[in-house]
Image 1 (cartoon, helix red, strand yellow):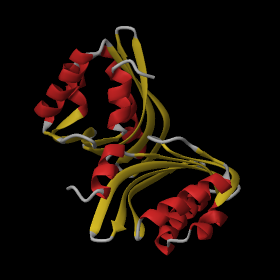
Image 2 (tube, one colour; image 1 turned 90 degrees about the vertical axis):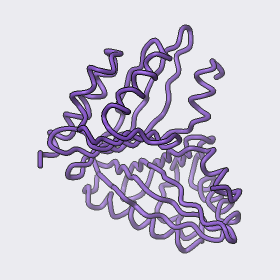
Image 3 (cartoon, helix red, strand yellow; image 1 turned 45 degrees about the horizontal axis):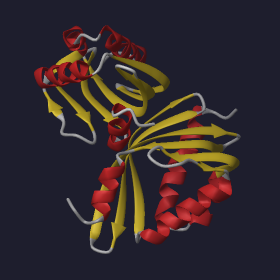
Image 4 (spheres, one colour; image 1 turned 60 degrees about the vertical axis):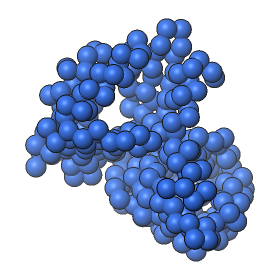
Length: 128
Length: 128
C-alpha cells in the first residue's frame, strides 16, 4: 500500500488533468475495476464505462476545472471538498462538490462525488 | 489550536449526539458564530438559527442516526463521508452524505453538508 502522500498526489493530479478536456488522458489514473459514482446518478462500473461517462460529459461542456478547497487523507482514502466549474458557452457554473477517492496500487479504485443534482441542472441551463 | 485528534472527537461526538433527538443537547458543540450550511439550501448563520433548524428537522422525523463511513482530518478541518438515516413512521431512509466541519476552540465554527436534495425528498415521501 502506498503512503498517504502518494494517495493525495494521485487525486490532485487527476483533478488538475480535467483541465485537458481529454477523457483518455485520465485513463492512467484509474484501476480497471474502478467504480465511479456520481451519487445522484447510477454508478459507472469499470474503467471503460467511467472513461466513456467522462467523455460524454466533456462533450456537453467547453471546459471543466476542479479547485480543491479542502483535502484530507486517512490511509488510502482521500476526502475532498471542491468547486468544479463548468463552462458552456456564456455560462460559467461553479458547482460545490465533495468527493471520496479510494486508492489501490497508486491508482483510483473508487470515486464517489456528492452534489445536488438540481443545482447542476439549474446552473447548466444558465439560471442563477 | 487543538489537535487533529480533538477535532475528530468533536465531530464524532456531535454525530453520535444526533441519536438523542434533542436539538438543545447539540448546542455545546457549536461556536456562537457557526455557519451550518446544507448546500442545497440557504445557510443557517449563528448558533440560534442552526439549533432552530435542527429542531425543526427533528420535528419532522422520529429519529435520525449518523453513521460515519470515512473520516479524515487536516489541521482543524474534518471531512466525513456518512450515511444519515431518517425514520418517519414506516419509512427508513438512508441518505448518502459528505460533510466538512471546521473546528475552532474545540467547537464547530462551520459545517457544510453535501447531498442530493431530490434524493431526500423522494426518500421522505416513501418512494424507493
